Image (cartoon, rainbow, N blue to C red):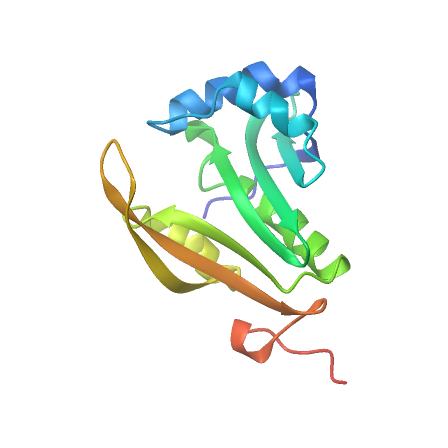
Length: 167
């Protein structure tokens, strides 16, 4: 990773939707539409974050859905010119702090099996591969790796690679 880029992480608002929809089209063969993203603003189970660069442009964004004590990272995307500069890491840090603070049991996500950079980042953050969804993605058809980071009511478990709270 190069020098970490300075970004300001803020909750997604309607003002960000055009840039995020554009980012979806750049990053994904089956992008979420602007309307799908807008619906998440009213979804009480969802939290979407935006990483803004120094000029106030969307450098990246991420989405999380929480049901009971389980968190699913639904989306994460970073502008190509800002990749490998810590943007995704900063977005994920906010979600991990949220998980700890809200005593979630785990965070989980799916990632294309060919997305080695993302898989490495998630591994560095304590996510581990727990399964595979055959032919999950289309365009091109590809498996998804299911990765999970477990928490023990706010403290990472020994299995997740981080020390407990000493209790």
